[in-house]
Image 1 (cartoon, rainbow over the protein chains, first blue to last red):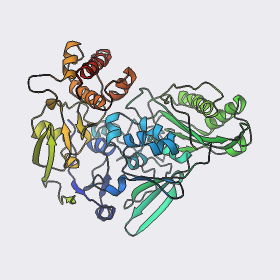
Image 2 (cartoon, rainbow over the protein chains, first blue to last red):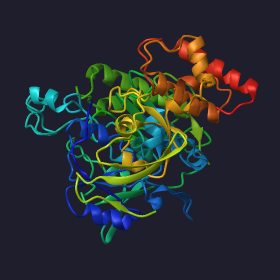
Image 3 (tube, rainbow over the protein chains, first blue to last red):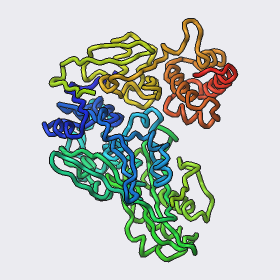
Image 4 (cartoon, one colour):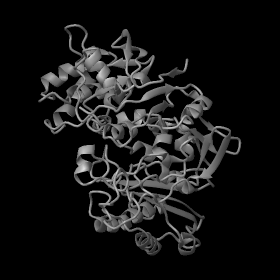
Length: 345
Length: 171
């Protein structure tokens, strides 16, 4: 039996009241609680106060802005994202990623904002206090050594959320509010490669919404997730691809984002020079897959061989691009949805 | 809805919810999970405490009709909600068609996962009265069973779906 450490509880009904409660210090936000509560049971967090977001109706709206952007409240559950017709029409890979998170039970409780702020994970961190104490703890919590990179000075716990990858590939942004101020920043700039805290969200800020810009006609996106079991597991590797081809099959735009490699998602650089203006055929797909493989160096921050993960990454990118171009077999292996190729218009 | 605030961890807070159709009003600590509330405050031990961290699904209950893991749900977060547990499935001495199929087809072996599986299956059949086998697998993908190999569970859910359809009943 795992019990929770003591905490006080606030359940405000407005964003303003939540920000006030958060500003009292030593408070953490809780939405679905599916990430935070297991960690609290393992002694990883012990806040003085939990501020619940569950009674704030404003966080649960999903609407289309006049410019065609989809604005999704941070409190929208992953099950709703997975079935919402606006999400399916405008950014289907986001719905597909949401549908691949954990289990139906978790998706019914977990929120989009919680998934974006998911704690990084590591085999040396997500353990009981007793287990962690036996190794003298680690950089991420209570210790000063990294068991993944023994002489490392920076935590390399794995970025393990699914929904941020397609959102970054679509060019999505997040809205952060604190008392008296609000800022919007591209989701790709929201993350930093520090496993201890891998977002730039300040402690007094609340992520209130996600904005997905309208996609040019013909944009297609795919999310692929590799894991040992087809449910419950966090990704051992994840890839989001978003791109567009012209009428001749030449690439007009291509974004690739890789997750579960380091503490932040890896936005692949240099794709414009490599791919834009060229036909998305076998030769180019192989070059892009090799390009991605070279930029990603998996570590032992997940219980699977890093070398194997690196090789499989090239395969996953190849399959995603084949699906994108429809020039190859529409593989559904490794957790991809059969409907993984969708077109937005 | 009014804001709820407790100033100190030890403060008990009032909670009202509906459990298996009965309105319940209790005082709980903020640290109480829904699972602990059901098992230790209300005596409803049909909901099982397995991994206690949201992995195994043994604690699955229906929250406003949708399956959730009660072990990682704070009791205070279900204010005003409807909670259904395995104790609410049978109609007096008459087993629910899902329970009946599980007994007849041997879908419960040690039984520890069974109450959670039954509730995930109930939610599925309420939404989709004639699910394909793959849809049943997906709906039960958050419920781990270490005995059956799942085959008999899937058979039993299919059997119950047929029974409910033929009787024209709601799950």
